[in-house]
Image (cartoon, rainbow, N blue to C red; front, side, top):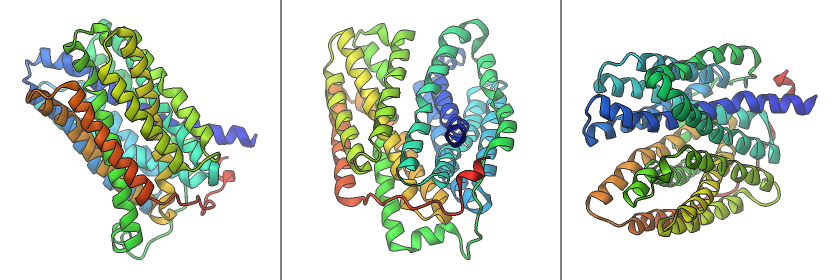
Length: 399
């Protein structure tokens, strides 16, 4: 029974990652359609993605701090409502300007959702169990990509992108379930703002900046590689990347990456796990950039998904425990908001490099250099702080 309660919480909170991934994936499938429908220039299309990322930066900052003030549960529900309302408004957008504005609003909900969800999970577990559950929660990201792929390839051609987005907006109904079954962490009033506490403490400030750098690198390389991979491969004559089987394989490859990372939690330190996964990402990225056949692209791309998303999940496990519970939402949100800046820069950086005729191997070389720098920051800058016992949160609160 105890185990059932634990995994019920994982299933409920994991949907935050699922919805976030589903939205990011759906946007990548929709952008070619609105480009044709509204005759958009590349710069206009770039603004669509940028607006979402900028909304996520703001959402992570605001919602993380709000979760420390009024509670994780209420803010998580709020972010889901913002996300759902944003998608409802999206189906009524008459032009690209309205689309960009709505995507910024939706980004606020999406950006706030993940750090708050991670904080809630971190509050609800302790020790190795906390790290494992955070990685497993992040594994729902892959499931979100799979759901979006099914909708994009099998549903969207039949009913159009607007009605497909309406299906995703149905997540607002899920908030009713959250209100009944989601536990919360008691919030202790703070004598001063959580941001003042975070930035005035030299120790906490250093942790935030170092973790922010790691999130910046992980998000920049992830979005830079994965949002541009299909276009880059088509430019080289590999049309396979537009197939459902390719998309499905890239998504499925993420799951064992997450599960192995979860298994390794407690066997070795989280820093060691993250170092392994970042190193694997480097090797896979180099292999992918040199791939010259469909089979090589599928194999190296699958390994890239395996390691890159496993690294993301491990960083999710490492970050919350670096902060005291009272400002955990603020710390997690701030670190991820810095990362979201990288998510905004990544796709633009790739476009700029392609424009000035930098070869694919050169682009991936830049990603490799950034990842190597990230490993250096991790090994010599970040302490793998032992998870503390739950503060004010018990498993009995799950019932």
